[in-house]
Amino acid sequence: MLWSFVRPHRRKLLLGLVLALFGSALELANPMVVKLVLDTISEAGSLAMPIAILLCLFGVGLVTGLWHWIVLGTVAEKVVLEARTSLVHRYFRAALIPLSKRSSGELVTRATSDTVLLKEAASSSIVSLVNGGVLLVGTLIMMGVLDLVLLGVTATAVVIVTILFLTLMPAIAKAQEKAQNSLGLMGGVLDGSLRAIRTVKVSRAEERLGSRILEHAEEAARHGIRSVRREAVAWTIAFGGIQLAIIAILGVGALRVASGEIGVSTLVAFLLYAFTLMNPVMELSQSVTTLQSGIAAAKRIREVEAVPLEPAAEGPDGVTSRNGADPHGPDDASALSHKELSTGDRPAPGGTGISVSANGFGGGLAADNGHGSPLLELHGITARYAPGAAAAVKGVDLAIPRRGHTAIVGPSGAGKTTVFSLLLRFLEPEHGHITLDGTPYRELSPQQVRERFSYVEQDTPVVPGTIRDNLLFTNPEADENGIRRVLDEVVLTEKIEALAEGLDTPLDATSFSGGQRQRIALARALLGSPDVLLLDEATSQVDAITEAAMTRSVRAQADRAAVVTIAHRLSTVIHADRILLMEDGGIRAQGTHRQLLEQDTLYRDLVSALYIGKTEDRGEEVTSGASRV
Image (tube, rainbow, N blue to C red; front, side):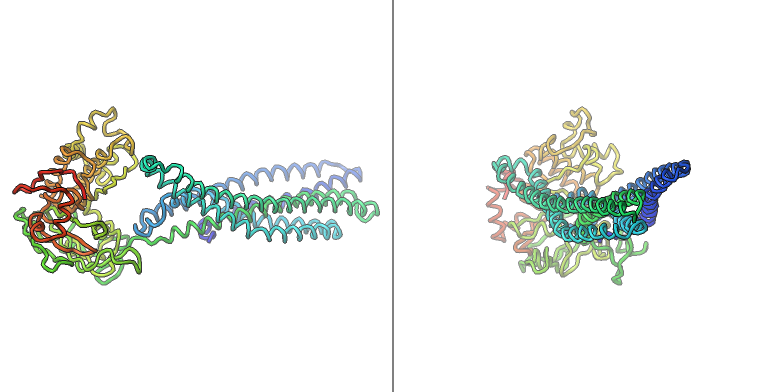
């Protein structure tokens, strides 16, 4: 699991390992040089050579250590960057439905704290584990060269410490993994709570929700404390074992010196190796602990990276095209470009050409109805959000003309939002197929489909940046004239001009009202000049005067392109060229407002809920235009 992150940097890691081993060799040489100094003193020889050797070892060790530190530090940062890059790319390329099952807080935690845990584990810990092992073995070998009896005392202590330490490691790793999982859950709940902070305060739920969040924090703390306690026991065993070994070495060594079996210089060198032995023991202990945390983090990161990607385009023969490229050649008449559809000749709008479905569920495909040939067609679409779940839509047949305004209405759970998800390829159909300009969706990448759409969400989330950034988000190439035009259409020009920084004013969820953010979202969509404009109750938070202006701009857009809305407001229903009435995942009926009023009881019930008293011949609302279902 961890090796997959390290593999691209194996050469740098190998260099770091070589430098670490070279540094360990220098460290192992020091006690022998000290022995040489002591022997030289006892023999009244010259100290020039031993001192020169010590200074040389010191200088080379400094350079080697500096190089080793830089190499491994650089690798660690690159591992973190690549892991975060991979996660960010996965988040934005993942299929929406599987990704949305994970909280945004959890996803952020994976890209932040988990990658930090990965940092040391994927670089220095791997090298330290190998180097520590080599240094430990090398130290024991050098001890054996000096005295086998003292080596036996040391080896006994090392074996006991190792067994006890390894016994504690699995429990430490499990506790750390549980602590990190609890932290991810806490982040998810906290993120959602902060997004809904107004609702939380109005509902007086601060204490309840705070307690829920703190439960995850307390659980993370409990597992963290358990991990810390076990780490403390492990480290105490490691240090205590080495200290006891040194005491034993000093006692046994003193007896051997007194008996003349070894010299004082040999005992001093052996004690230096015993003190040196603490370094590989510490290095191995830290490396194992860090690797346990890193492996757990790598596992969680790979779990997120397992979220399926959006489908790629397939050719007519079922072969997936690379990078979502258009599988059609330039001469394919069915794969018209966005520019051709945006600027090409279209039939002038005529009558509504709309009929009510006679057979209820399933509706029917509309032919050329005066608004141009169908741009989008759904053929026998059945879709569900998870295997085994109830079908969100079933057997839907639908055609969206190139121009005109189509409103989708129906009770909650009827399948309205699912239709949008299918059109935007957030959800793939289980049965049936969708075509865009006669080309099946499966032969187009999601990006090729979405470049023909603009979408205004009901919640109108704010894109990070300024007002200008938000307006240009869909169409970065738009000019100032285009920006002014769409701001006029959504009645925002005066508001923007009154701001000190104008279009360069930072946009956030608190500085603008919900209605103003909704108008900015609609302006952004209109600036994209889409072939299909999808509106999810895009005027739900604006006043009646502003709504009338926005309705005129939507009407103007419908005269040159397709507009599809999920409608909950009376004004949207009345002004639509065609209304689709959905119920239980199917199209119950379709027609104009007047036709459906006359022929469908469910529609009449929905209209009654909108407090419609009566309508004029033009279909204008007389009462409570802002009322909602």
